[in-house]
Image 1 (cartoon, rainbow, N blue to C red):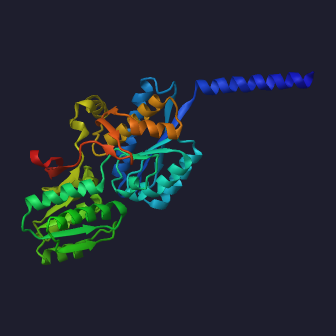
Image 2 (image 1 turned 120 degrees about the vertical axis):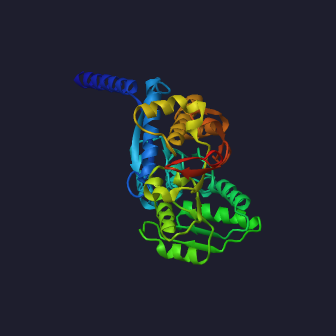
Image 3 (image 1 turned 30 degrees about the horizontal axis):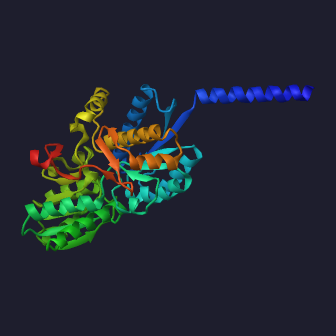
Length: 370
């Protein structure tokens, strides 16, 4: 009798514990990117975007009767660290990752997420390989390098006819992909670059490269890489009295670029998606960020939008089951701070493509307006 009574009490305790757990249930999501290191400005954008999205969604009641809980992962844009972060998320019970930033991190991490049943939506990784792997759980809210390279290549061909062009990258997955896609477009238009060169990221002195560019009489430098190295190269070009135009990609959408270049950054061009801050769909959230003293530039809103899409997909699927959520992501249209968009069969976003931006006086905006 005592044994039966003990068993009943244990069962009752289990039921009570389950009920309490259900009442306080949370859906664990994460963002991952370079929270430290030379590209930490972008990690901060992602973190701020994720935190605000979680705050707003939870304030509106959460999803499926549950609140979101956010985990942060620092991959420092290092592929091995990205895999370690991905495995850490698995152990933390993460269901969804808005990340990573660098393509060189997103691609190896995506194999872990796809294997472990975690939805991944990168707000920033543009290398085509990420979605060309045909992993059913992998998506992105940004465009691709083969789209970005077409815009850059055509812009150079249209605006710099007969000029001497150099193409340089830092050998990382994002950087090489961007440079090679731009080169492919230029070459397809009958334009051959004078110099195709690589550098090592993280160095402080690129004067040897700049001297080579100067001696070759380069008018336009297309740089595939990140703002830290691009900023140093731009500054060192001006120090050598070069007036060449530096053109790059979306990794220059941070005020840190100007903090490196100063006035030497004037006239720098870069491709990036339409600025979400200019969208009516984002106005309320942008105002919320600015009220808190933060300017939601770059990939802040792309991260916010990725989380919105995921939450709307699980609401449609009525479950956090990865396969069912992925199906909802591929069949739905999502109303976000990025505007309305959907995903194609590969997981790429079907949204307006890239436009050209220009730096002037410490600010960047559409090149046509600057």
